[in-house]
Image (cartoon, rainbow, N blue to C red; front, side, top):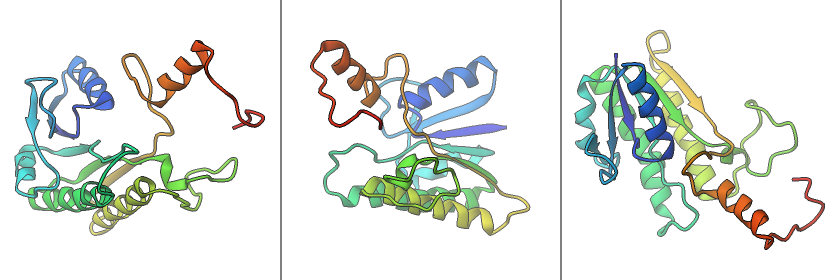
Length: 189
């Protein structure tokens, strides 16, 4: 079984690749950013021809996304998150790949009520959450075309952090540690 890790140059992808490597799993990392490792193969999910490179894979882990808060133009979320999902599903169809793991986001729920679980109604409040929700539907449609053969797993992380990550959790903890953090409200959130 050969795994295509699409968007694998980031924080999650590099840690996943290390674990797969340790378990002697056959995989290839694909990303637009090839600067962090010579092991990464250039692939752009916006370019359907670029996805022909995954033709020998038996499964896909899609980590690729436009996710930052400062993306301009806003249409980039649609181009990457939704059209990228369409392109990945088309490539999976073309190459007979029947297993996809898609990393979505808890952002599809927006400011959800307490105790909302996976069956909760989407309530996204930004373009990131909206496009991740719509991308989930693209992948679900792909799986529903042949549910006996196709497997789809959707993962919705709430937050991603760990050693070497300088994202939101790191920034919050750094502000608290520096003494410059100001709490608004009761701090129950």
